[in-house]
Length: 199
Length: 139
Image 1 (cartoon, chains in turn blue, brown):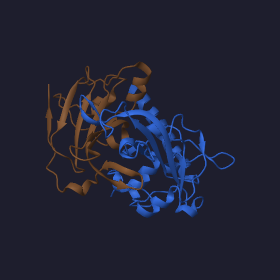
Image 2: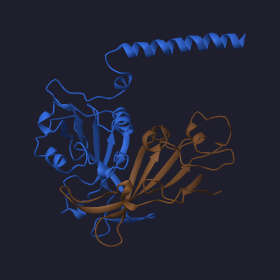
Image 3: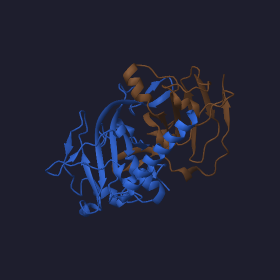
Image 4: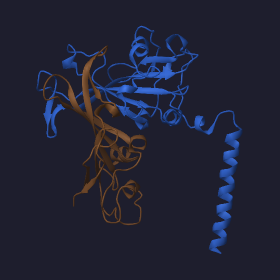
């Protein structure tokens, strides 16, 4: 009896799975695309702060301490960078950042107070720079049509302080894209600093 | 808590430490709060580095080890938490049984860029070949 119930249940479940697969294959977008988080915009075209980025794939944390950058780094201080997971899955398989890719750079100040001229302090694990308060965010979105003037990527600042702005306007080419186009290793992304992406 | 040191540096020039918040994770029954431990603990109680932690775990935080000489940092220590660990901690104020933390150590380089004096993790191929990974468990 139990075996029979199990078999029936398994058949129903497998049928449901098959139906789902067929439905998704018939839809205009692929299953992979439907699972992605894509950029959301206001009616005026501003980018809405992406959601749940702390659950995205983390790729690295370049560090520009204020103390080593004239007291106020342009991007203070840890740059904790995440990529939207569905975009990463495609990149992993294709080696190309797909349309709709989002990178989220959350800034995070070092833990105060600094004890040395270079901004470092000492904790039980040694002397260095430890994570402190969050400090705003920058976001970039790949959309070759929307951002054709900046190489296919749009750049946004959601404050360099907390709280992060709920929306942001796209930045002019000379503010962000210029450096990315000139020096980033791959498709305006600094893959040279992110081992997970540098292939 | 059990700890593994991966004594060797992996293919990406990285050393890794794994910690498991453990109580009864050796049992075959999976705790609803801690299924992750099942993936890193073998029947003898040895730990291993979980697979795909870079893409399936959440980043918990990083700290940078200051350079011995000159400005900047020589290493970046990145800590990842198994899925659900951070949410459970924020909800309950403690790490759930079965939580797995991975600390990965990246060699860092410091240089001048348009954003200023920057320390960053080095590319995987920057330090040449690596010895094979080995594990050592502590009671």
